[in-house]
Amino acid sequence: MSDRQASRVVVIGLGRFGSSVALELMSQGTEVMAIESDPALVQRHADDLTHAVVADSTDAEVMRQLGVDEFQRAVVGIGTNLEASILTTAVLADFGVPTIWAKAISHEHRRILERIGAHHVVLPEHEMGERVAHMVTGRMLDYIEFEDDYAMVKLRPPREAIGHPLGKSKLRAKYGVTVVGVKRAGEGFTYATADTVVEHGDVVIVAGKTADVERLADQV
Image (cartoon, rainbow, N blue to C red; front, top):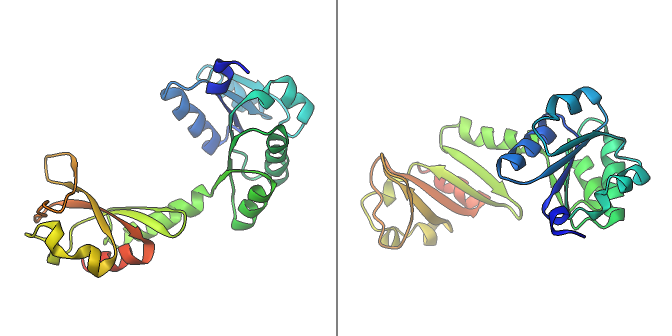
């Protein structure tokens, strides 16, 4: 396998999700080969990607002829066609592609993709829905949840933390969370330390178990 092949990513499916991933990878300087069954989508993105081809991604022999079996990283962006999504992921797993990302449209779909070999599965609509729901209440300015019930949130500091060094505010002991960054108006984010004093108008980045950060957000 060449170094050039190893550094590229194959993106399968050029719908909204797949094309967004492919274009962002290109903007970061990563070469992208895109595979899509719809000629119109391939034509739309052909000038923006390293290589775009019309092909049946569920056909292992076609995929092998395209050299997909030599890629180290693959993204399956197929959503609504569950059969194509599952079969394509299975082909990549059979090839032994080391890192397979796949889009799912339901928790059941995700479980199937994980069982057949996808290493990372995302549910874009579900995850964005959760994120927006946490922000709609106004308690949080941003919300990102990770695996194992762990979250990172951006919010205004609770009253009990204002005017005191973080080491003395006891937020960690009381809520089980860690303040990892602070942003003052007109300034950029800085790493938080035990000596950092939080002021009115500041924005803080807090990390911890989802239930713990939500409990802290209730105090804002």
